[in-house]
Amino acid sequence: MDLRDVHNVLAAGTRKNQVGKTDEERTVSHLHEFCETDGNAATLSVDDSSGLVHAVCFQTARQKRLFKAFPEVILVDTTHDTNKNKYKLFSIQVDDVFGKGQYVYHSQVESEMADNLSFCLKEFKESNPAWVNIRVVVTDKDFNEKDVLADAFPDARQLIRQFHVIDYLRKQVFYVGTRCGCGPEDKKILLPRYS
Image (tube, rainbow, N blue to C red; front, side):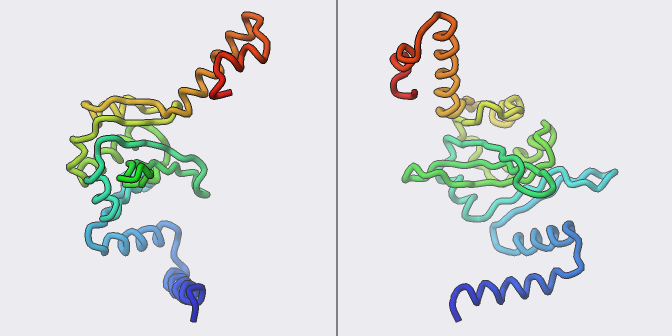
């Protein structure tokens, strides 16, 4: 029996136990199973009147240890269209001792509304006392709720990812160059490294 066979046996057992359950029931079942592992944490934000889930937050014990070891600089990102229900994946990442990005927190959020992100960050802070050591929060240029981050981490500076700063500068130089009559070669001289 090879690794693929083991995976197939486990998947068949999982499917058998989940037959007839709704997506919501399967999700709750998986979250309960996830939380049975010592140190793992998961929380839900549910609208009382509609029963709609606004956010599902989860973090493994390993992710908690990683954050505790490297809390000074975090990268906050939201990924869109990751599932059929159009929930957004809200993640927090740190760089480890080798400079490699490591995820330390995940949430599936219905939308990037301030209430949802505030809930996720509140849960993150409750599970991670080392949050007080955060000094820098790096985001994408299009992260909508920068005020939520400022409220959650009042002592931290907010920075935009280097890629977005360079991209913005390149566009501005090309725009100004076009208006001033600069040719393509002139534009390359202005930003040679990033053209």
